[in-house]
Each structure stands twice: as C-alpha cells, then as structure tokens.
Length: 358
Image (cartoon, rainbow, N blue to C red; front, side, top):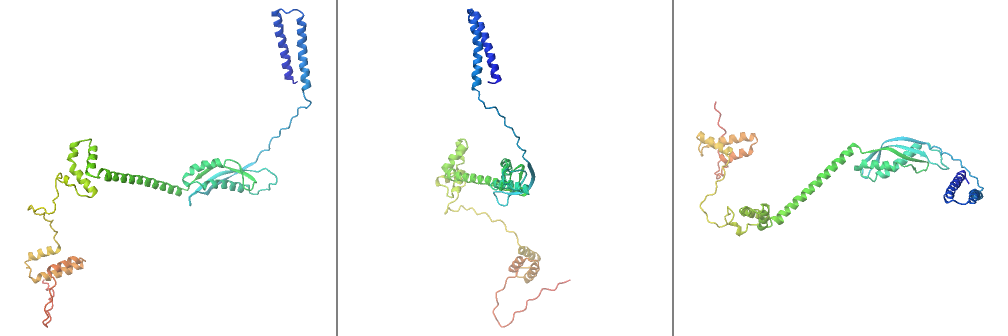
C-alpha cells in the first residue's frame, strides 16, 4: 500500500471513531461498548493494511530513460521564374517558391552531392503535375492550390530526401494575360450579340407570324396596345391593312380598299383628262452651251462654220481627256456624212482651219 493510501485509511479510521463516539453519547450506550469499540477501531485498520501488503507484487517500479530526438537538419533554396506548362498550348505559368528539404532516414542511403537539385526537381515535378491540368486563366486560384499541395514534406523519386515549398508565387506573363483579357472580352461581346440576334429573330417571328399574320390579328394587337381605344383603332385600320399587306407581300383585301384614303387605280380605269407630271428639266450639256454660242454669233444651222469650229473645240477638249464631250460635239455639229456616189473624181480636200487674223 502506498503512502497516500495509508494516510487515507488512517483518516477514515479516525473519522469513523469520532462518529461512533458521538452516536454512543447521544444514544447513551452502556459502558462495556466503549472498550469493544476501541478494539474494533484498532483491529480493522491493521487487518486492512496486512491484506494490502500481501496483495502487492514483488516487481519493482522501473523508469525508462527518455531520450530526446536528434534535431532534423533542414536547408532551403529559392527558385525564381520557372515556366510551368498549362492546359493550353503556348501558355505557361511563371512559378517562384522557396524549396526546403531534409535527408530521409534509413539505412543504405548514399551521400548526395547536390541535394538542392533533387529537392527542386521533386517540387517542380509535383507542381507541374498539377499546373498542366489547369487553364491559364486561373493563375491566382492555382497559386493557392499549389501552396496547399507543396506544403507537405514528401520524398523525392530517389528516396534520399524529403522536400516541400513555401512562399509560392504563380503568375502569367503580361502579354499572355493581355491576350486572355481580350479573348474574354470578345467572348462576352459575342454572347451579348448572340442574345441580341436571338431577341431580334424572336421579335420578327412574333410580328410576322402572329401580329401581322392578317389584318384581324394586327387590329387586335393594336387595340391592346392602345388600351382598348376603339375609335383610334378604327381610324388606323387603313394603315394596319397596308402594313399587313406589305409584311405578307400580298394585295390588300377588297373589303378594305374602300377605307384607303388614296385608292390605287385599277387597270382599265378611264382617263380623267389629267396629264402626267412633266419630267424634271435636263441639265444643259456642253453641246447645248456651244449651240447657244453659235446662235448668239448668228451662225445658222446650215453654216459650215459651225462644223469647223466644233471640230476645233473637239480637238482642244480631247487634249484635256474629255473624250465623251468631244464626241458629243462632233455628233451634234459635224455628224458623219453619207458616202457620195462614185463619179470617178476625187472629192475636194477638206479645207484647213481659217488663218488667224491679227
């Protein structure tokens, strides 16, 4: 029995003796009970101590020496701006991190001359396996994913060391990020345009196949739009009839022709004596202006000077690359003459231009 148990047993014995004494005084026990009570209080604890000492085993308490584990040596190196492939071709992530490693425990491990290379290769392999399955547009999300995946010490492929990474930075090159932003903007604009196109198609289909299917449907639609103003709808019947006819590429029904303000004339309608409107006046040409000049000079239609001057003007105009105007002058004032009958005599030569007078 331990010291604590012995102390507890003595304390309980004394406490029981006090309680029995109080009870005996209150109940007025006879005198012979007091010696018996004293013997009982001495014998019972002694018997308990003896039984407890016999049950205790002979095995002594042993203490094992607690040895403190040897500190694990960890080293680190910084990796900057390493290109990691993404799910899309020609788009790469720029990876930077601090790589930490420690030697793996176990027999038969040889000496590694470049443990930093093994650690960096192990970390980059783990990072690449994740990055090549992600789209380049989620670089910030992938950075946190790599931060969790590379935060555990994992052995490398050779088993010589265990490596991890921290202070991870993952970005995209500025040019690639700009391209992705432009592509995203184009996709959004295309989606908006597609919705607008579908909306316009739906609206045209609604107007063509439902509202303007016939004049009756157009009247009901117009009556609903005008809050059941019947008078306004009746006044707009000619317009609705024309609109429905134009939308369906059909003629206006006969029953609605009388409602039109200007009924079109049918074929065979007798002439009412009204003359058609005169065509707009034609702009005077260069030949018209030259004809006015000849008339002002007093050259009549059969005057040869008109043809002679027209040829001279035509040559001058051709020098300014106005060939059509030159040909128009010749057709107007010097038309080709019909061939004369062959009489055996040569025609007189064309007189040249008149000599200029000072």
